[in-house]
Image 1 (cartoon, protein in one colour):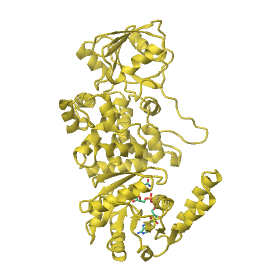
Image 2 (image 1 turned 120 degrees about the vertical axis):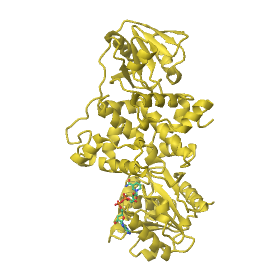
Image 3 (image 1 turned 90 degrees about the horizontal axis):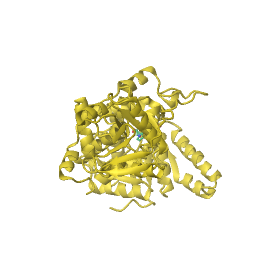
Image 4 (image 1 turned 90 degrees about the vertical axis):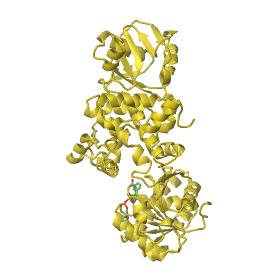
Length: 506
Ligand SMILES: NC(=O)c1ccc[n+]([C@@H]2O[C@H](COP(=O)([O-])OP(=O)(O)OC[C@H]3O[C@@H](n4cnc5c(N)ncnc54)[C@H](O)[C@@H]3O)[C@@H](O)[C@H]2O)c1
């Protein structure tokens, strides 16, 4: 279906944070825009805030004044809902409440033409439920922008049970014309992003609860090893714990309390304490003037005069580490084996989801030290290590020294299953795999959504493929065995792909 022509008027209902941003996006694409809010003066204030934002771009020489003036002139605040009747697409971004949204949609149906597309920016309400009482539910579609709408590229185009496919296609093509990256999703709780992202927060919270490491260390590992823009604690401090906890609870309850989505007691306690994050000065970190963020745990210089590393077998996704060690001036001797590095007394291996203590005992490896997944071992600035209880202090020193010689900061964490980045990526891929199996979205759209909506360094399904067929499945199997919890059950598709020896993109 073709996109809506830029001559066609767009109406935005609700001139709050999202509505104003969406109005700006539509006006930037050349559409006349009606902006309506039931609160007196809110639509004018919305337009004024857009003008103020864009004036900065003019002042920086990034936009011409006439272009700004023309854009602002295209946005028309309207005080009566009836004034939006001629719009070809109406996007509602009012309060997140089913009954209020239903009331608005019913009024819009009476006011607008039969062909008008009605779109909702809801984050959490079912499109099917919103359409249930409509006369023309086939004309209703989710158009889920991310905050701030002018900056975030992702738009989830969400189809309810009754949504006409051609309506969704028109909205998809229009969002694309507006410079966005649209993806299709079926109306299921959390759509794509708010569902698939849950483990990003949940696994870090769980690791803190189990005293694997402190928030600053886990954040640093997710950034410096995982290549994520932010770790879970700094990000939830920014989002606000009330908001993030509410989304987690809503998804948890919407999936009938599936333990995959279990909320965290740690986050609940922050909310109860009123430590909501940056917005009120205290979350996991303090944001009061003069307070500094605690430093991540970093091992001091680990001495070792050893210069020879023995690389045994294929290290899989960590193979690039061998090259990095060689470039750092170490002598690397390669020989057959099961994917381990020997240095001094230490035997280092990439986590396979088991605790080091268990793996050392079951596989009969003395002095085992596990290291975490890195997005790119050639560039990682930091890596987590976890030693088995049986491992000698000398062996741990050697393992630490080896990474330090390659210029990698070492954070030593307690021995828990799957370390930090590996465990998080495995659980993200797990959720993505289930979302795909359940028909929520295509593999490519899920990956695009996680990258465009949350700036992940890679989509979780293509990341899973990059780790090698079956690896995420094995890691999750081991984590599930360790905890005996349903939460870590591997998704059926991961299991199937493992036995078919293929990836999601194969
Ligand atoms: N804030 C986010 O990060 C975000 C991201 C994506 C989607 N959303 C969704 O977007 C919608 C709006 O969120 P927001 O953060 O912009 O909220 P907001 O509180 O900033 O703005 C909502 C606006 O809607 C107006 N309003 C309420 N009821 C109305 C009605 N019946 N008719 C006309 N105007 C009405 C309010 O006066 C207010 O100005 C919600 O559905 C929310 O779930 C929010």
